[in-house]
Length: 123
View 1 (cartoon, rainbow, N blue to C red):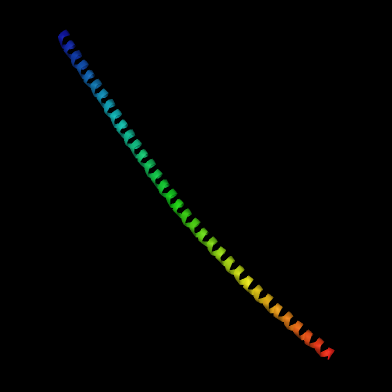
View 2 (view 1 turned 135 degrees about the horizontal axis):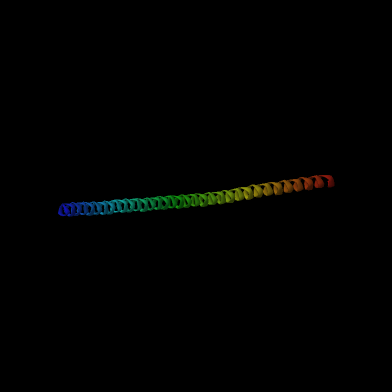
């Protein structure tokens, strides 16, 4: 009987040891699974960060290109405005010169008429 009890106790201890080993193995497997999930999540997070940075970089490049185009357009407009101002100034000077010439001619004609009137009075 004592031998049977010892054998039974040995089986129980063996069973408990096996259960303990199984529990340790399950815990290790669960830990490994959680670690793999964490690594995958971190990998995906880093990938998302890189993609976001690339999108932001592309956006900045587009903005820079748009800014250059706008600055070029503004310069062209300034040049066109300057040319128009120069044309207006030339046209205005030409008109003023014509007006001055007409006024001179009118004065000369008037002076000539006044001289003829004076000469006629003297006669």
